[in-house]
Length: 164
Image 1 (spheres, rainbow, N blue to C red):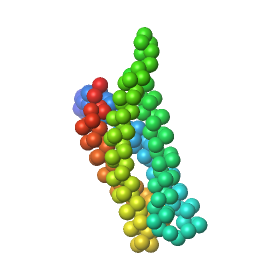
Image 2 (cartoon, rainbow, N blue to C red):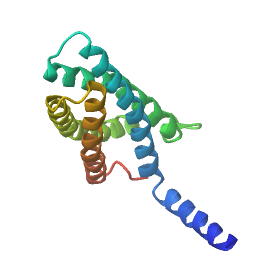
Image 3 (spheres, rainbow, N blue to C red):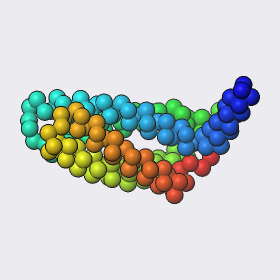
Image 4 (cartoon, one colour):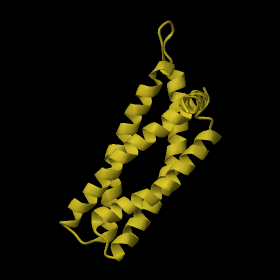
């Protein structure tokens, strides 16, 4: 039995090493997304105390998510990839930074458009069915996250974001 466990760990280790950039990218997206997820739910619930406008509630929830999600992702991505951008001999590689930022902006921007549309629509629909605002925000985010994760990885692969 211990050999089976060791084999599984070695297989996982090989997978992580082979797809390190994809794994780190998705880890950062998910970490930032979880923080944004709760921020959006909180924003939706607080906004509902002041207004019953469902579409505005959905938009406020989305903006609350973005206010946490985007800065946290940018920070985490840089921390995980700073070794690629800083060479002890050559110094900082600004052209590689610009090149990667362009790829990230392309992959995330396109995916975020679909995320925003899906999030606002599903959040609004859940509110129409008398779901509590924080639950509507959370359910809408989960649905939108499925769309986002698939798209950002497909687009990231197409723009060669995950090349080492």
